[in-house]
Image 1 (cartoon, rainbow, N blue to C red):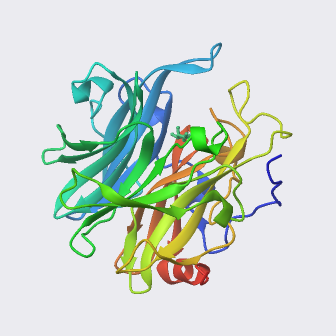
Image 2 (cartoon, rainbow, N blue to C red; image 1 turned 60 degrees about the vertical axis):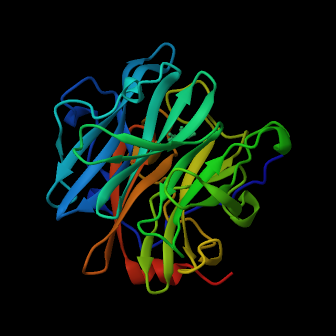
Length: 334
Ligand code: BMA
């Protein structure tokens, strides 16, 4: 039996923009769109850039979608977004007929270029990609994992001379055939070849989790350490269904931790409670899979405000803010 969860509440340091109303949703998209969520966001040369996931052609009878693309949006303030006329990436963008879906983008500015992490479903498993874009129209794929691995995020600079990523492999056989997945960390000399992998955040270390942990937004650097958002999932099979699907009983919360600046394989602090747990109408009442908070972007402003972008209910994109010092203070030493 999965461990039962206590009643969860979001941290008081979190402020939802407009009481949690979306900053981007299907109605803002100039091409077919049903659910717009799980975005990656960066601030690059003064402009905010968002890459979002758009599942389109929803079929209510089958509770599934005709397809999924990644779109781009731009903003001067990180709040009001102008969406580019055409999708940025489709499953065809990789030129590999084995790819059946591309989704869940994360963005990192690294060495003055926008890097993109993404997930693809293929006929032979789930893969995580790392790419760079110079023109915001095309991507150059630098690496693709072997199945099954995804949810990758890149650190914004090299550490100890190597690139670093967080990731979430899917070890099914050794974990009793069910999803019980943890966050890992890997290193690379060139963004192509990845290794020196180690377990970073196992499910059992997160008090509000009984199912899986995964990287959320790319880490931000602070004097206290790398500030890292993660998602943590708990399941209670006794719970009623969440959302439009026949059965969806998972609850996704956002958590926060601090990693050592020089040795990011070391967790130096973590909040024992969720940072954001589903609470608003958009997070709990209506959506494809309600009770899902899926952060993919975190921006530290010059004045110490942190903007956190998160997909709500796999349906809309929302924004919360917090003070960086408050987030750090939540990460109590382990
Ligand atoms: C995960 C991914 C995410 C999604 C989440 C909740 O497995 O597919 O894209 O937001 O499930 O449905």
